[in-house]
Amino acid sequence: MQAATDPRQTGQITDTSLCHGWAGLLLTTERIAADAARLDLREALPALRDRLTAETQHHPAPEHAGLLTGPAGVLPTLHTLTTARPVDPEWETCLLLQPMKAM
Image 1 (cartoon, rainbow, N blue to C red):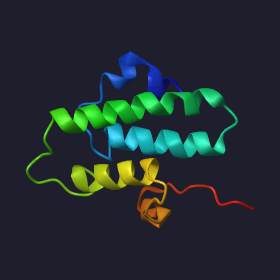
Image 2: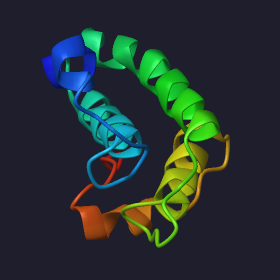
Image 3: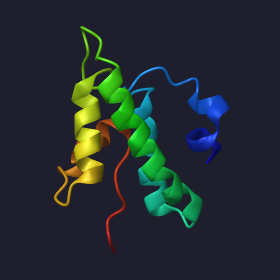
Image 4: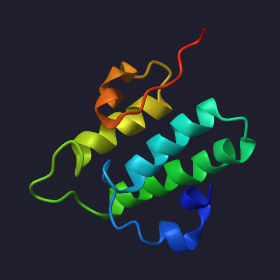
């Protein structure tokens, strides 16, 4: 939980990337929250979404950016977590993340 909410830890995030940035923290936190009994993880999600959106607007992507380091990873993350009809979550398999399937 503290990795998503502690300013000392989130203050070390320097970009929006999927690999080690805000998109990765948001997607990982959302997937863990979906499978956890702890409500505090779900409560942290709106602030993480807002931060990712703000950071995306204020900091341009690096010139040589790809899926893990640029908008190619940020955009699917935002789309997956904010639309009524998200993209197929299978794209997350390369990150070893995948939403739980209903049994």
